[in-house]
Image 1 (cartoon, rainbow, N blue to C red):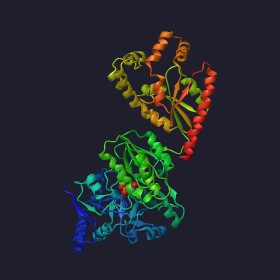
Image 2 (image 1 turned 180 degrees about the vertical axis):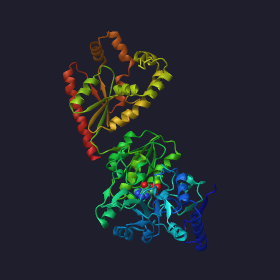
Image 3 (image 1 turned 60 degrees about the vertical axis):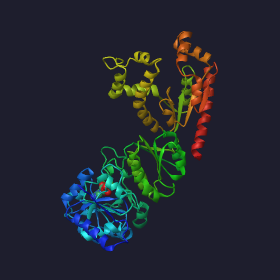
Image 4 (image 1 turned 30 degrees about the vertical axis):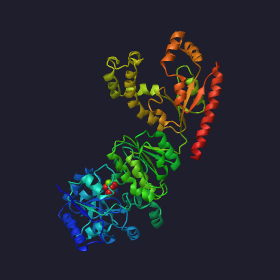
Length: 553
Ligand code: AMP
Ligand code: MG
């Protein structure tokens, strides 16, 4: 199907021509067609709200879930009684102050409003958009336009007519270009069928502005958190993973300097980064999309969807986003980012400290970790996590078995020895194994680390090869003179001197760890008690300096 594109960005030009285009759009709507319409929030995909067949087409074109209602767009509060009943006076108070504007009110519906528009609810969402072109089209059509955002379901909303053409071009009758959206996030949805009114979706009108006019407003839990499988949000649309670009998104909250640093630590080269202007220079190797200055939330709202969309045309495999605080428009911006991330959120202000501990056998890693435990730290043993993940994942086992046939017994038990022989001294085979292990292990370790609140150590031999060092505030090499290591592992593992040397030589040497890690804990004493004391002091000082650094950003 051919989509007609009308450019109405400039409405000061040829009046006759503009009126003709508006009449043409209105005619399409009256005849049951679909029109992409500009509003100040985001572009909408409009149809005659009283025509069930036309409204059904919106759902088809967007791939929108049937239970997600649309919003009726009108030109003013005088339309309310046509579509709503039991209208409380506060609806008129709000309309007087905020319409036309980014406020959708949820009210009891008139029986005449089709189920298709309200998704079968006995309420209806209604708003008056602040855009001259769409207001003119509604007036000319003489009916309320039912419209959701014009994006295909699940994608970031459209803030330009080009976005709309990209998403639904060829499947709708017309797209009207009214220029880029000035607000940039969807309307604020406020339920007026309860007392006090309830914020169902944060949007272009800050809830503080509403509260200044009508007093306290409750906030639906879905606005700030991801809901459990049994919970239902007030606005059905809030339960869907929304606004998502193709690559997975991690949102980082906290003071801007802290969140920028946290992203700097985590984002590998080639990652996508959404950040405030002040911090863009921290990411020379990443693909950066700036949201504007950290104190300009209006600009952040305008840019948030464009930022999320922009990465889809690139090859980035992960996206990190700096998140504003929840005040004013920040609540809507942060909600859109968090939903895009499936609520995968990291708080850079938390007092979490992650230390990566590595080093060769016999150097004293175990004693160092004991010292950390006595400081209240948690130790994540990456080797143990590897075995737990492996035993629970058929995909993981299959991936190993494919490359290393025969290392599993009939019962699915891994023969570690056999696998060890396969990779021992064969560099490329070891690399192949590591690639598989890291692929399955890293997401689980990331989850474990994200769940930590205080001091935590990652005990990992392959701290750098796996990329786990990126999760750490500091990496620590535990080192010791070779002769001491030989003696220790001879005693500990009851092995010959020759075999002890062989094992030590098969591993990376202290120079490697020293070169890679942020700091070194050298264990040159023959007394375990003395080393424990050294290690305690070392970690106490280290933790104190990291805390200090986090406090001052
Ligand atoms: P969209 O503009 O595409 O985000 O879709 C409209 C939004 O308004 C969705 O999140 C809906 O869940 C919400 N909405 C529309 N009508 C109602 C209603 N009657 N009750 C609650 N939420 C509604
Ligand atoms: Mg939408």
